[in-house]
Image 1 (cartoon, rainbow over the protein chains, first blue to last red):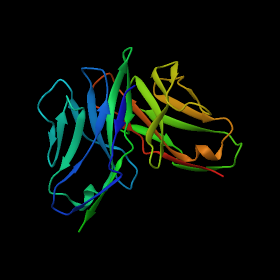
Image 2: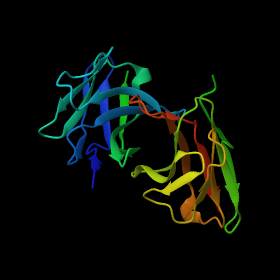
Image 3: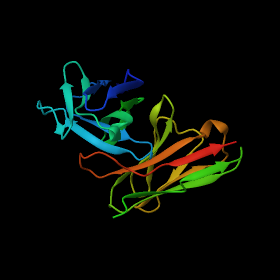
Image 4: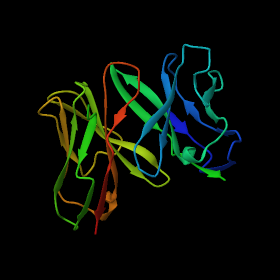
Amino acid sequence: AQTVTQSQPEMSVQEAETVTLSCTYDTSESDYYLFWYKQPPSRQMILVIRQEAYKQQNATENRFSVNFQKAAKSFSLKISDSQLGDAAMYFCAYRVTTSGTYKYIFGTGTRLKVLA
Amino acid sequence: NAGVTQTPKFRVLKTGQSMTLLCAQDMNHEYMYWYRQDPGMGLRLIHYSVGEGTTAKGEVPDGYNVSRLKKQNFLLGLESAAPSQTSVYFCASNSLSNYGYTFGSGTRLTVV
């Protein structure tokens, strides 16, 4: 069964510094998609970045980038130049494809605190 | 473009009461999902639907029922609420693309 593990319940970073959130997953599929979602105090789930497993190049969205290590089944999120608005829960997610149906499995989340 | 709309946003129920959560999307998405979010457990899939008139069980379906009579709506029902169902419930939808879920804003349900 596919699983997603976020081993860091909470992380802190100084404003303007860089932080990396860890995510590992388990799968027997060769082609899949991975996502990072942000949940600020407003509770809204916001897609931060996604990665296709068949692409070797790591995805980047402005200050957010991933380090995708397919062989190690690792998908970490790097936030550069951290801002106070980055404070949130971050969830890693894996998209399962079963009989043509898409489902997403989420990790337990990492709470990121940004210190001024 | 409203995206995914969940109603209500907050609700308090007494044990044994019933209620229905409504999820509506205006993006013509085929897939719709109900998740619950609990501290330390992330989001867990309750039920999902791959199209109008179809539903399937997720990871934690017990105590919930769903219906998808119209493509744009996905209803989650609690027939006899229990304190263990106190949670934040999220609806999400997805097309057959690879761009991730669109989420509703969540419903905070407290069962006392």
